[in-house]
Structure formats: structure tokens, C-alpha cells
Image (cartoon, rainbow, N blue to C red):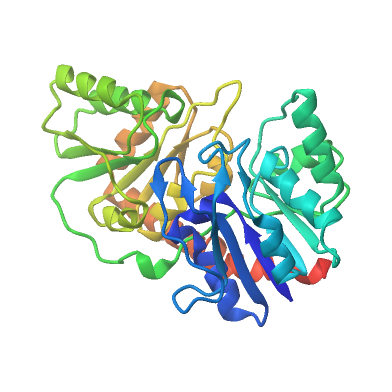
Length: 366
């Protein structure tokens, strides 16, 4: 079979690892379409069948960086050239680009491919008439849906998607990227990796960290966003400047190495009316890096962690402080969750596992 993957997230090279694994373990012909440019980041383009990156099409897009409204230029000519048996769309059902792809496949390709559509959306939303039309059209004309979490699965079923729905995250991890050896330290090293925005709970984490009375601890905040200046001001005024550091400008491929210097990862996300944690990819990265986990009860975090870490009540600084204090004080507890997390990621979240599960889905619709 000829299978085409289309999605803006594949502009990041590490996110292509699952597709590379599918290509490695199957006899299918695999192709990838992703934007040449996203926001202000320029990605070098490679033509399909090139010696350097065969089968990959980096296309120009309209509205780069606007997930809801971006569309591809020259997509139809690529699809006509490939004549795919399956088009796997890793975009939300209500996005312009999903409509563009399905519309072209339905009305402009002689050979009608099967359509696989992905969704993370774990909050039921009532859209404007335009987006509601797009979503209904896409759900009606796809052959299977992959939901990134249980709530997303329930929502597309509620919206009467007339096809099978499977639960599987978008991308996994490659364990070869994560070292099993730690850089030792006498201090307990706590980490946060993510966007520096209020809904990620970083201010809550700082408040809980400042309450800790144990002396041998540090907190490293890794990310960037609109709260960066506020965070630096809070740290400066707190008197904890020697214990808390902020790292910005970290590239995606540099993240695995960070876990060598981390004992605990905290994901303190706080749900809003419009958003809650849809998966938390950093959680499975921490599992791969043998780091103990502490996450909030927001969205899919408990679903991802299960018994491989601790969960606190979201927006509850007291609960966060108490559980963080336990992890900081008890090395055996950290080691237990480190081991459980690594076992869990091996069983459920490697790119090898996701590739095998994805191929099962294709076999059911081909």
C-alpha cells in the first residue's frame, strides 16, 4: 500500500520517528507531507525520492503557524503523483487543512483513498457554522479516527462519527535517545518542561517549591512564553535564586539529555474553560529518561501516568506541595516511580509500539 502522512507537527524531525519505524517494519510505501515553513522557522525542503530524504514533501503553506486555518500549496499535484491507498491526517477534524485534504481526495483523485483522521480535542466545543460544517464533512468522510486520549474518543463518538475510533497518541519516544545513566548530584533535582503560560501551572509549582523546607533541592524551569519575565521576577524576589534556574531556547532534540540531570518532573497543568491537558508528551519522555513523575489531575495526565507516578489535585497548591515534599524526601519512592515509568513507556509509548498498533488499524480498513 501507499500511505501518505500529512501534519504540521512533522516539521520537527523527532516527530517523524514513528513514521520511520512504520517504514522500517512494513512493506508499505510511505510518504510524508509537512509544511516547509512554520511561523518564522525555515525548514530546508527535499523533493520526494531525493537521495537525502526519499518520500518527504516539504510544501509551502498559506497562513504558516495558524493551525486552524493553514492550507497547503501544491498538495493536489503531490497526491495525484502518489495515488495513495491511505491518507493519514494528523490534524483536528475542524481544521481547514483537514477539509482541504479530504475534499481533494474525495473529488479530485481517481483512486479514492481511505482516510485516517487524528484528534486530540478533549473538550466538547460548539463551533461557529463554518467550523461546524468543516467538522461534520470531515467526520462523515473519514474511514477511521485515532483519538489521542479517552475523552477525545468520547467526543467524536458523541458527534456521531460514522467510523471506528481508536485510542493512540500521535507520536511516541525512541528509547535509544535517552541515556540510562544519570549525572549524579547530592541534590534532588526537580524539573518543569513546557510553555511558560498560566494554564501549564508553572506559578503553582513555584509556590509549592518555595514552601519546601528540605535544603538539598533545585528547580529547573525549561521553556519559554509570555510568563518568562514574571517568573524571573518572582524567583528574584523569593530569595531562592540559587535554587531555581530558567533555561530558554532549548531545541526539541536537546530535551532527552536534560533528563540525565533530573530526578523529578512536575507537570502541574491547570484546566481552563477552553483547554485541558490532552496528553503531555513530556511525561513519556520523562518515563524514557527514568525520571519520577508528579502530575496534576488535568485532562489526560492521570490516563498517561496511571500508577507510574503521583497525581495531585489540579490548582491545589497544598496537595502539590505535600506530594512534591514526599518525592523530594523519599529516594525509594522516586526510584520506584522511575522504574514503573520506564516499564510503562516500554510497554505503551515507544515508537515501535505505536507503529505496530497503527499498522493494525490500517489492516482493518484496507
